[in-house]
Picture 1 (cartoon, rainbow, N blue to C red):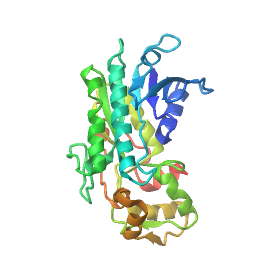
Picture 2 (tube, rainbow, N blue to C red):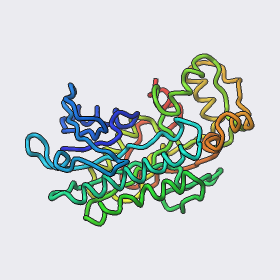
Picture 3 (spheres, rainbow, N blue to C red):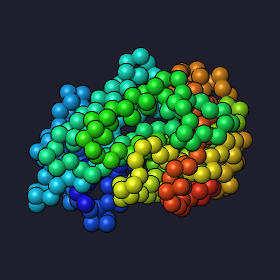
Length: 305
């Protein structure tokens, strides 16, 4: 297939692109700079989500005349990249909503639209769920990230209205050795400086990077799958349980703990995503027959190493 990917240099995007290229697919990277030749065989098409611009001609047809079969949209400002100032919260919102609507409207307007758009989303859509188990049937929460996620998913409307199959990949915490939130934890735990955050009772809905990529490809390949899908392992764990698993796998002590007040002082409003709780299950993926390679925290951590 010929598959376009936004956010192709991020943690998930780079792993997904490698997987697709390894299996012989053509990958079109949407980039904000002038397109350039790439050694890995992928091609580039320019876009500017802020200005809602995209090279539709380059997107529609490859150098060999092949049409676009699928789009994976992953681009967006990192939620944990900076402190949540008013300006950065606006950037988090706009990068997702404007970027998604730009992609959706562009593919909807192609003479030969792709069969599927798999658009990134997040389990933050459910808000803080405490120890309550939730799946795709749960109502959205009311906090900042939940509201952003709702608009984010709604921004694919143009594609759906054009008859393109749309799947929303609601991702949890991706367990990876480098990149993402977990990539920041590994160095601390390897030094024996890791420990629980807050009281440790908050649930973390995680997924290994390998399972994340496999789930995206599952959503691309299966024509019957549309709507929301939670990309989380089937066994969410508390922060205390994750801390213990990190200690077991890395064989390091985990005696340190960061109190809640210190997290709030250091992170501001974003601290709610660290000490908050998301106990999310991937019900629709499991019902569709998807099989996780790393269903437990120990397995996901070992895979990341």
